[in-house]
Length: 252
Image (cartoon, rainbow, N blue to C red; front, side, top):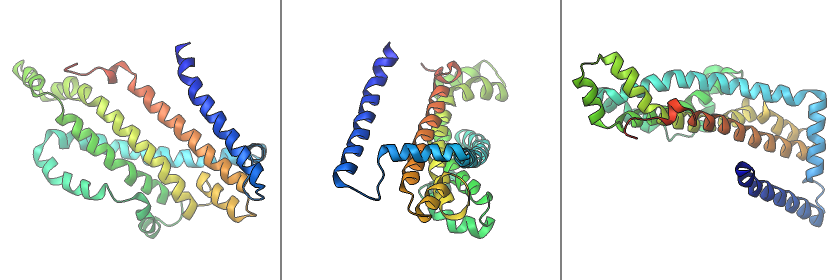
């Protein structure tokens, strides 16, 4: 019941927005912008011919590869920078310079290096998500209270045990936050990359629908699907935040 009470306001707001959308389109007698019913009809059209699932799976596959590679690089790198001052002082300025650069700005470079195949969006996803996770992980290591590290060292634990039993559990909340941020950015980037350089994926679906007969019902359908999948991906990251191994932390 409590979860239902939390859900109802969002459902009512969405229903009101859909109603407003329908009302504005009908009142303006727009011949281009679709009504919600036309968007649903267009979505069913994509479902029936199978193209919708092809585009969704293509986008998700690219995100999975690029984001997975970013996690494999960012988490160890962030832990190393957080523990070794020389590494942090050397690498952090470089990452802080690269991090604000929009991933979209890397598109010409990605096409130059990797062409217009799948490697370009994978590279863009990697670039977009790796820096936030590195910075967040390193910051998480720095927030560990020094007294807990000193206590472990006083008991004579090895560096590996200190790392495994103290540092990693303590930094996990920050790692998950970095992953959540990185995954959100990765989903944005893959859609933008697909609009420019590919022939599959949800980004390509939007551009192709616009160019092939002004199918704005499919354009809006693609936008809504992108938002729903983004919400679902964020929900998966929030599930990770609820794990006991993530919620627990020294000093709490």
